[in-house]
Image 1 (cartoon, rainbow, N blue to C red):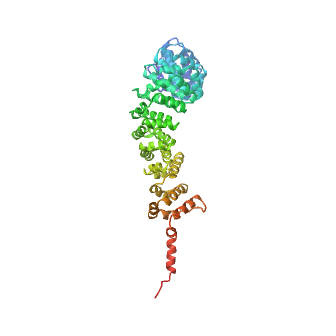
Image 2: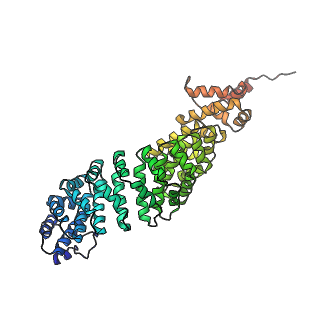
Image 3: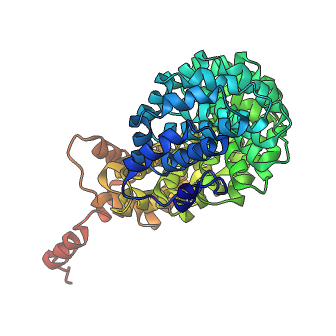
Amino acid sequence: MRELRLLGLGPDAGLDQSPWIPNGQTGVMALLRPLLLDVVPTIQQTAALALGRLANYNDDLAEAVVKGDILPQLVYSLAEQNRFYKKAAAFVLRAVGKHSPQLAQAIVDCGALDTLVICLEDFDPGVKEAAAWALGYIARHNAELSQAVVDAGAVPLLVLCIQEPEIALKRIAVSALSDIAKHSPELAQTVVDAGVIAHLAQMILNPDAKLKRQVLSALSQIAKHSVDLAEMVVEAEIFPVVLTCLKDKDEYVKKNASTLIREIAKHTPELSQLIVNAGGVAAVIDCIGSCKGNIRLPGIMLLGYVAAHSENLAMAVIISKGVPQLSLCLSEEPEDHIKAAAAWALGHIGRHTPEHARAVAVTNTLPVLLSLYMSTESSEDLQVKSKKAIKNILQKCTYLPALEPFLYDAPPNILKHVVGQFSKVLPHDSKARRLFVTSGGLKKVQEIKAEPGSLLQEYINSINNCYPEEIVRYYSPGYSETLLQRVDSYQPLTN
């Protein structure tokens, strides 16, 4: 015991406190292993705690625990010893398994899952919690490990754990179920078949913020996989209850609520319409306005998914004042991936009709998108999404005041779309034709160098055909020189 305390590994040390690591790691493992078999239970327990804290520190130490052939002894003792030892042993398994799929697989290979599942039925809530935590850390790595946890019979017992009164146990059990469900539709269906959705839906308004985070996350991990699973989550009557979480004082409750709504909305227009009807879009827009950074991201993506489904749903986003909020995110967020999401969402809103495109254009969003596309500091993803958004909006935009600045600033690949829109609008709008001349637009079009026979040249010809030939000549480059030459060669009439 004295030696363990000198290492900072005594029973009075917390489970997750980082130990002082001596150079002789393997020597420490060799010292601790026989202590797991000591006749004094407190020494066994403290040795297990020490191993757990070492393994928790980094993956090298966790690997040393595996190579030291310590896991079989822990698993054997886990079924036999008192609750204090069980908690410590489960902590070691969690600490080893959290680092990598390979280390988690080592725990599975030594037969730990069956014993951990038995611990889920223990009388002591702390033992259940420690076992659930270890199982969750194993399941989170990949579908194969998650399936191994399912095959060991963990899911029904984890569902029972979330019905226990202890908040800490609820949190860990919900988290473990979330980690199982996230990998595939089949695994999510297994969790759903155990009756978890109804229990999760009842916990959405639990006053504990950390539990709410886990509940919303678990529902998201179920809903994301398929239309059927998303509909099962909706049928548990989570709306409009879940919308109250968008106003929660905990930022991560807000984020996870937005994520859940996003994962439902992305599947079908019908599910998006249900969210609109419940007031979900307006609530998410308010939420985006009340937070910053990554907390905003799922809400921004939700608006893009909803708008992508149909004209009517995109108009619902516009009516709820989603465009100014997205434009604000585009301008003020420092992170490129958030700007890229906002650009993507704006592109989906503006791509439907001239009315949709105008709603985006009047917020002065197009110049911001252009500057992000052309900036060498923008990430590749931001450039790609900005370009696509500009193209989507321009191809529907007939609001010429928003288009005209692009005649001067846009690169050739964007310019052709701008000139194309002028060629569609000007033949049918006499007022716009006059304004195009007085604002200098017609003059600028004459200065564009287009390949003969190209689409851009066709657009320019269509614009020129809207005006008398002498007007087009007047605004063509070099025309003033031609006039001056005529002045030079002109012989005045004399009486």
